[in-house]
Length: 275
Image 1 (cartoon, one colour):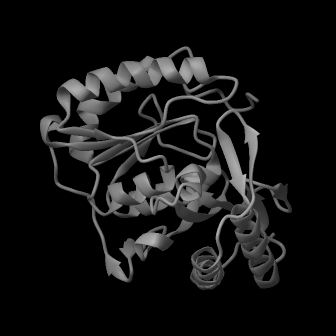
Image 2 (cartoon, one colour; image 1 turned 90 degrees about the vertical axis):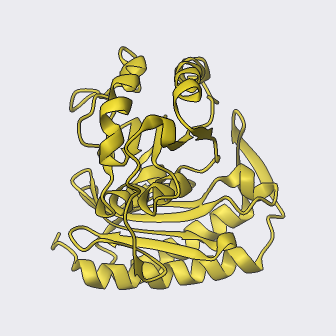
Image 3 (cartoon, rainbow, N blue to C red; image 1 turned 180 degrees about the horizontal axis):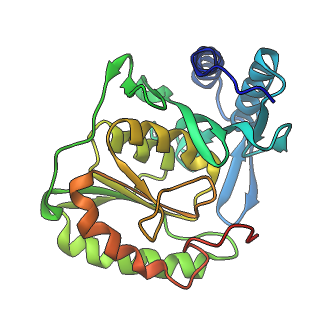
């Protein structure tokens, strides 16, 4: 398929997000169902995903779409990827710490991202090579260079069939970071953590078990703001990655070795072609 014009794609994404934010702010989660171990979906997740899918299909139906709730359709090399409400448990409890995260991916790399944080009133976006923005203002990562001065976001403990492995990894990292970092925070939303690395609110974020809808938008926003976004072994992060380290460059030397806890698990980078 012809490669989409990224400026036009950003305009389409922003307009779709406008409608999604309006819907999320004006509707309550009235129907909450369980789709797995401690994993829930609300009527708002489904409605937002359908709304954005329809808007983007009207813009260019040749671009594929992957949504957390309803799966994939269309082109597999160039596609939109969406988490309609990242932090659904937070959202269902009335916490403002949740986000709508939309990315445009080509050949396993995000090229564009828009992340809205509706209940905090912010929106972040980036296009590859054009910098990162929050509410129209340029953003950059923090200048924090010492681990004992760093505030680090860390993923939730495990749920689902691989919970025990993720629990072990989180526990080991939690103990090390708690003893060395200035602070460790567990926000319950990957998308928010990544954009907070981008604007310097957090100095790093470490995530296990992520999927493309969790990270695509935040990864390009963080990169364009100057962050290193890496896989567990320190290689560049992609949509194939099951682990994400987003960090200010000065902290990478301290944090990358800690990711060795994931070696010999499903969270370590897998060879191309591995299911």
